[in-house]
Length: 88
Image (cartoon, rainbow, N blue to C red; front, side, top):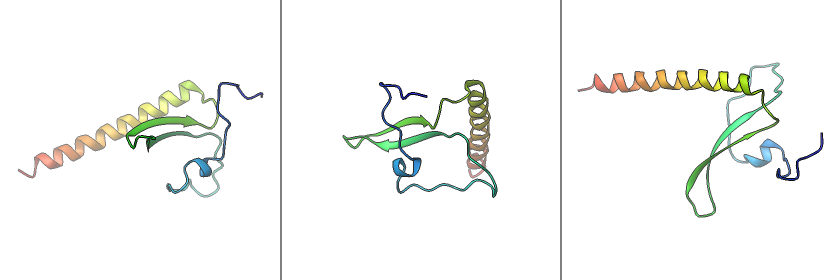
């Protein structure tokens, strides 16, 4: 596969996300693709968001997984809001 001239040179994830940590995958797991959402400070010190993928993801699989994660996050936030309402 030839690199796309419009795409920046790819580098190891650990080099790009230096200093960040995350929970490991289960023992024996072999990572095959990553889709990463990164909050970072730009050159002006403003917080902004970006996403990167290790390879072109299967769009249907990615959309499905993102929907699941959004639903889980939404439920978690609703539980927190409901718990906060009970504190009155």
